[in-house]
Image (cartoon, rainbow, N blue to C red; front, side):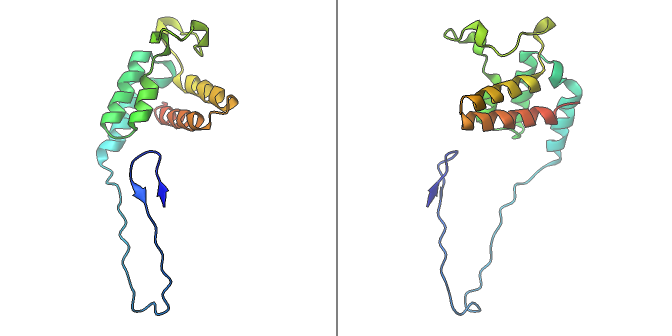
Amino acid sequence: MSISKINNNINYYYTKNVNNKSLYKSKIRVNHTCVSANTNNIWDELRKKYDITNATFDEVKEISKKLYKAGEISLLELSIICLDPSKIPAVRRDRLLCAPREGGRHNWIKVFKDIADRSLSNNLIDSYKTDIKIVKIFEKLKR
């Protein structure tokens, strides 16, 4: 038995050896996730409207909220993207990863690659994996 870290579902696998296989035929159901045409439309729409390599933090929040509402990213990914470390009183300014360009614009792919590299150097493997997922999401949005 294994317990998933993401959700509370318990995965239980049971196998039984049977000598006479013809008596015990079973069908396997596969639950496929239904992917609608809106999935591709949301990526195209966001790609046309925003430049992820030169976006403000507010634009990135809008992008991530739209992706979350479309079911393309998880709540964890949304919360990591929308977290603004400068709003947390205990975080020092020198801990921010990159200085904003004019108008507070960043290359968000580079920002999260830097965060992922820092997580890996600190042996935070779970954080590294999540940050790399976010990098891949942003790379899908790259023009």
